[in-house]
Image (cartoon, rainbow, N blue to C red):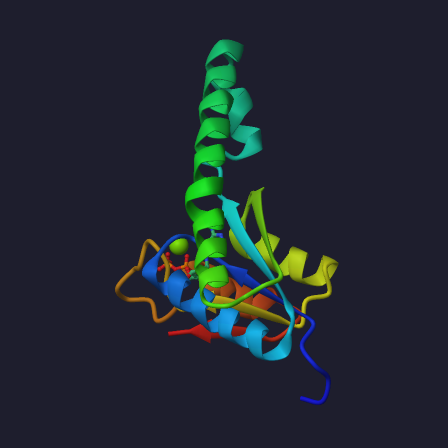
Length: 153
Ligand SMILES: Nc1ncnc2c1ncn2[C@@H]1O[C@H](COP(=O)(O)OP(=O)(O)O)[C@@H](O)[C@H]1O
Ligand SMILES: [Mg+2]
């Protein structure tokens, strides 16, 4: 690789795997002076189309309110905790972002939109399925991401 890394995106879910990915990414940005973007994607319990099936606006609103509160909490617990972790390890230019939707798709979309040089993820996450070699997010990302992906064991 000839050019210097300018920006790295680490995708975090609060698991020990994602902590290792964060450490790896933090070490990389420190060596290269790159910006570290930290992305947590909240996957909604209900797909937007399914909401209408409840039929009762009140319940929908309650659900959306609750979901919003959960997002706010996760934003602090997951994205900001990872940012702190990276900063403690020496990463100086960091940016934590929380989005809502399909995690792998968001990670790939953000990597493209922000022209990141490299995406870093853990091999597994919060919900490891024993039979699968890779987690669902890391496996999908490896398939759809247009930039190089580092999968940290
Ligand atoms: N919701 C998410 N937002 C951002 N990154 C995620 C998310 N879920 C997983 N990741 C990233 O993908 C890695 C692998 O997780 P995943 O594929 O979900 O494994 P598992 O199926 O074991 O939960 C995690 O270590 C993390 O880096
Ligand atoms: Mg997972």
